[in-house]
Amino acid sequence: MADQQPIIIKKIKKGGHAHHGGAWKLAYADFVTAMMAFFLLMWLLGTTTEPERRGIAEYFQDPFKASTEEKGADVGDRTSIIQAGGADIVSQDQGQVDKGMTTEIKDISPEEIEKKAEEIEKEKLENLKEKIQEKIDSTPELTEFKDQIKLEITSEGLRILIVDAQNRPMYKLASAEPEPQIKIILRALAPVISEIPNRVSVNGHTDARPFPPNQKKYTNWELSSDRANAARYELTQAGLPEDKVLRVIGLSSSVPYNPNTEPLDPINRRISIIVMNKKTEQEILESVGDKTNTETAPEPTLPAPEK
Image (cartoon, rainbow, N blue to C red; front, side, top):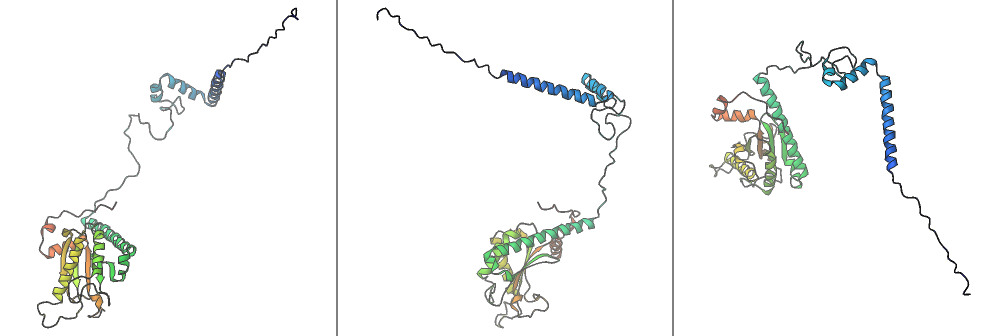
């Protein structure tokens, strides 16, 4: 056993090939791109004419010279690389005149300006009427009284009527103290009316029912005036500026709701709020002797449209 040689086994591990990376892919991509550009160039040169190729060569040699020289109609013979219509802008032979459409300006008389201003103002009042109607329809507190709120456009402007109903008066009997419902209505309308600069007139009306004979110093004239003033107070308390109120008057029963209305009909008892147009406002100022606004007023101008 001692004479036996030990057996030695050698195991050789074969290593794999080293990683060469992807640099060859980038080189191949560059080669393919260059070949594609080369074939595109050859194709483009094959589709151009001799003057066009000469023009391109001249452009790359001296771009300014190639774009200013006058020659033919081809790329190498015209004054610009880009073909466009119209005269050459670098030509100094003749002045160029724009022959396109021009807006004809004509003189507008003051009457036409005034008429147009009235149309624009009427449109603004129509928009205000729609806003108030939307306010009435969308506010539960006002919807209950919508039959007693009437809106109409007149020659004076936008008229807002708040009328009595048979069992729902706006004021206490023979008194200027407002009921809760008219306070709700007036305080809801005031912010909407304030949105436009037009001034307002507040008018009070009564029916033809007379006061007792022992109240000779207080009649429907005083009552209608006091009710109109109470309505003005509620409007201003709700945000209507004081200077927007131009007039507060009482008309007693002199102006019925309409010519066919019975004198004692409750609908005659009403408050009329008129958002006046400029013409009506000016007439009122003239009627009370304020001539300063008419004597020194400039010519009428068109108001700016709404944004």
